[in-house]
Every structure is written in structure tokens, then in C-alpha cells.
Image 1 (cartoon, rainbow, N blue to C red):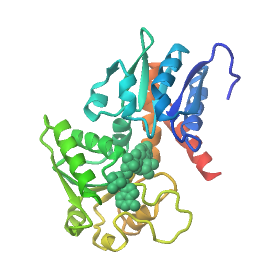
Image 2 (cartoon, rainbow, N blue to C red; image 1 turned 180 degrees about the vertical axis):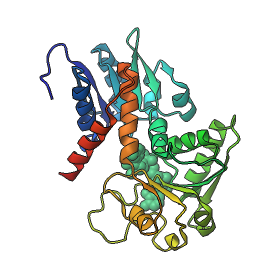
Image 3 (cartoon, protein in one colour; image 1 turned 180 degrees about the horizontal axis):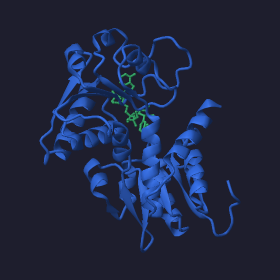
Length: 295
Ligand code: NAP
């Protein structure tokens, strides 16, 4: 990275924890390649300080902020305006500076999620989403733009599943997509897996598993015996690469996508919003993140 001077523009990430974040690595690699005198910092922030910190960083003329777990919903209060997507999804991962020391809240997770699916034809397809947490919102919102036939949300907890499905039905009420929730502790999900064209894992199951055993696979190992090779598997996790679940898909000759492209693409979309430059070196961002993950 080039020297930080009094003229360097500051951007960064607020979350808790942030010490393992790949964002500083890939953002700073992009700024260097773009010839921008910018520096990206990862800043741990507790929920109780979020409003104060976002206000202060705006006063310090930060050129943009990314927001991660656990603040993506809480940060809405710190925004003067929201983009349409952030408003639809009621979650913000990017703050863009506005006049009068204000922030605009945006969400680039949706576009980040969609980019690796761009080459796939998913019109009229059946999609299964495993998990119903924060990232599943961005996933469902993104899927809504793809003219798919049906989304089945598979979860373990009746009440969080119910709340998620109701919330998403409300948010998507203007659209025609069919969305239903299935509790895999109570119902057999094999028929849904068998007919799925695309399955997305939005749970942390399989994350940071060092060994190569087939443990820690969403919904358990046995269910994947009925997986068809036509099904695309998309895991939002990017450590390890591939996850044990994606390995099962690869053995069945399924097309698989891991979470690194989504991570890189949501970062690239943030840079576009902050800098106004459309041409962001996505490949440099990805290779710097991959290099860091290998160490
Ligand atoms: P989250 O809000 O905590 O949601 C996690 C979901 O997984 C919840 O529905 C939770 O169910 C379910 N879950 C957790 N542990 C489970 C288990 N052992 N068995 C069954 N279900 C389980 O998390 P998130 O923010 O959505 O993130 C989820 C994963 O996506 C993480 O691994 C994260 O790193 C990854 N992610 C990647 C990107 C990217 O750019 N690639 C972006 C965002 C997230 P309950 O409601 O029952 O607890």
C-alpha cells in the first residue's frame, strides 16, 4: 500500500468482530490498482456506539463505510435516506456520504449475490434456500428479480421461519413470486431437493471446517443422495473453499458456486457507489483475497 498522508481519503468497515475480515485486503488492493489515494480500515464497533461512531466518521469526512454483522439492520437509524433495495430489504451494508454530514444507506449484498448467477438461466426455476437469517433476506430479494417460479425456505426453527416468510412476503408483495417455508425437523425435504434447480446455503454450517470429513453439511449427509446433477449449489461460505457440501455437489457433477465471488462483488459495488468509477478491478480484489486465505 502507498503511504498514507494528510490527503488520503478514508473508507472502512464497522462490525463486531472485524479482525478476520477480508475487506481491507481486497479494497486496498483495488484502490492501489485504480491509482486512488484511499485507505480502507476495519473498525470494531459495539452496537451501543454505532450511531455515535457513524456520525463521527461522517464528520471526519470518511468517503464511505461498509457495515457488517451485527449492525446491518440497526444502522438504518443512522441513515438520512435509503436506496430502494436497502429500503425493500430493511438492511444496509454500505453508507454513502451525503451533504450536511448525513449518510445514505445502500445494500450491495443483493447485487453481490446475483453476479455469480448472471450466466445461468433460472427463469421458471425452483429454488431452495437453506436458512432464514440476515443473508437469506438479500438472497430472496435477489432471487425475486430472476423470474423464478418458486422459493422454498428450509429452516430449523418454526418461529424464525414463520417471521422470515411473512416478512419476505410483505416486502415482495408487489411481485408475483411464490415463497413458502419448510421446517426440516418436521417435514421430509427430499422432494424439494430433488426438484430444485438451484439450492443456496445461507447458514454458517460448514464454515471454518479444517478437516476433510463429510461432517457439517447443511441438512445432514443423507439427504444429498437424492441430489440431481442438474442442480446448481451456491454456498455463501468462502472458508473453506470448497465446503464439504460443495464437495458433495462436485462429486455429483453439479455446478457449484462458493461465497467468495459474492463477497468480492458486494465490495466492488460499494467502491462504485463511493468513487463514481464503474471500472473496478474485481479480479485483483478476488486474487488478493484468495492469496490471503491461502496463508
Ligand atoms: P445469520 O443471520 O446468523 O443466519 C444464519 C441462519 O442459519 C439462521 O436461519 C439460523 O437458524 C441458521 N443456522 C445457524 N446454525 C444452524 C445450524 N447448526 N443448523 C441449522 N440452521 C442453522 O447469519 P447470516 O448473516 O445470514 O450468515 C450466514 C452465513 O452466510 C455465514 O456463514 C456468513 O459468513 C455467510 N455470508 C456470506 C456472505 C458473502 O458475501 N459471501 C455474505 C453474508 C453472509 P436460526 O434462525 O434457527 O438460528
